[in-house]
Length: 319
Image (cartoon, rainbow, N blue to C red; front, side, top):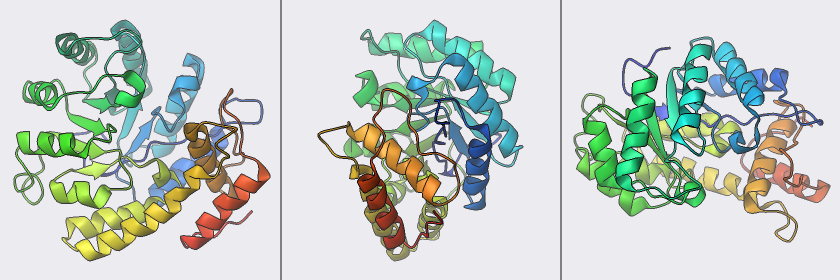
């Protein structure tokens, strides 16, 4: 589905199911895409942080993207993460994604070495000029150590370099300032689709972001309960904020599964990714709950906690 209009709605960052030997489990990934589409999502983001993109080889990245694009079969747009340290490497990933059939690209600022805002603008413009696909900026300062300013994003939106932003900065004030800079809630919520899409990655405050004027959400736990996020989004679009808040509160409780792993044995990211994957395994969507090495897998006690959170949220494990 070529992106002829700005993107709105629920766009989960698709988990990457792995086999016990660490290879991409394409059969499970295909089932996961069907699970997400059955939940009513509006797009798919392959090769993002929740996809464990930083752990994948280039060959594995290609396998993931080919599988997601093939399974989606044009039913929703597929956004391809082209995340890497330098512009040249990102451009290579972008060209590969275009060849596979991705509908849009998602890139962070360069990282490892620090870059100035002027250099970051040059980075995004080079990507956009190299590959003729809509380009989304991914604001992820916790990983790339650079915060994309509202001024920079607005500049790149106005000149057509960027088609949108995935905001995972955790800075709700900055997100609100960007929405205001690009026209504010009244100019974005009920009128014609905006020329620039703002998607929040803060899955616990989606109702607030939509009320402020964001266009959608990229929720990691949306892998587990895509239909819940779609219900939240549809309620917000209809102006039924009480329903949206209740759905958000249920999803906040479900999200508590990310802390299932013991803090003295693993990082929170490992715990979160492991909980998502084991939840999908318990729901019968994917075969294994393995995460990429060197992340530590969840133990049996942690998996039992994940199962409890699923049941409390009204989701029924089949395993």
